[in-house]
Length: 342
Ligand SMILES: Cc1cc2nc3c(=O)[nH]c(=O)nc-3n(C[C@H](O)[C@H](O)[C@H](O)COP(=O)(O)OP(=O)(O)OC[C@H]3O[C@@H](n4cnc5c(N)ncnc54)[C@H](O)[C@@H]3O)c2cc1C
Image 1 (cartoon, protein in one colour):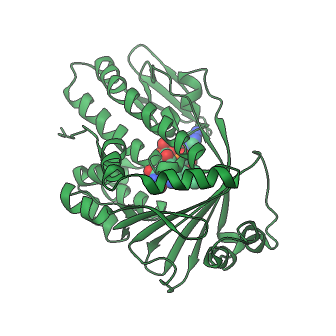
Image 2: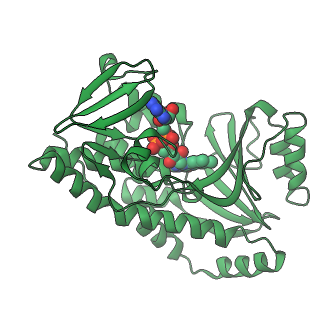
């Protein structure tokens, strides 16, 4: 919802919406399929005027690019190094071509060049969890209704599923395990499905019906967030500044918030340095809180032992109605950002 607000402010929410699926109901279930928590996102969406959308990354990128003219977007320009001069930043690419600019918004991800330039704290922190993601073409909505997003919690594993466009069901499976592993493609869907052999049978069927080359494996990592996110005219944004675990779906959303917040301060502050400091002051507490919550969510909801899962499920089932919605508002959707533009 907080990302949707940014898209609205940029005037491109309708473009994304036309290629996305709106989620009206988010559910947490146990591994056998029993309901633990249900969040009525559709009702919250009507109250707050903000939507929860699921779409593919390429849809979002196309919508963002649609707001730019072709000469504003330079693709395939791989940055090799950067350096600050007294008032400018010099950026060099791998072909030794050079650009000189006032400000670099360094959003080149968790292992990017910008992070390395701004801070010495560059080592990603492994969460202890591996994630497989897949997309399967199907018209069968009996397992998951179209406007519903479900996460199932099992011992040491979680399985989430949502439609990301008509006829395409996206899923993820997270499992506690060591980092740095590699999957042989042969029989991969069947092998992953066997991990959830004693879960509700539809879970294994969705995984097993996914083509092996449509499955991605990622070791889930985050980064610590330094107090100072800029050096001279190079400002870290998005994952380069504060990569967080994907457990609350907030990494990309926070990157979008960063961009509008920085734009607002650049428009209003008396000079570049003040704008960058104001931006850091605004963002640090909020992104640190989301990082903390994302880690906590994974630790609490991916307990390895069955008895721990039973305790967890009991606690989740006992949460009074309304608490989860209020928490959602406070932690995820609540953002003071208002983009007034230039
Ligand atoms: C499994 C998983 C699920 C997720 N689900 C969600 C979700 O539901 N919602 C959500 O909001 N977030 C989610 N996230 C997080 C989200 O993907 C990231 O937070 C987001 O992509 C960060 O965007 P970014 O632009 O900062 O970095 P990135 O997406 O990493 O983009 C960095 C870009 O910089 C480019 N780059 C790198 N180095 C250079 C260089 N030297 N020169 C030029 N370009 C360079 C890269 O090619 C890349 O295109 C998820 C993450 C994972 C792993």
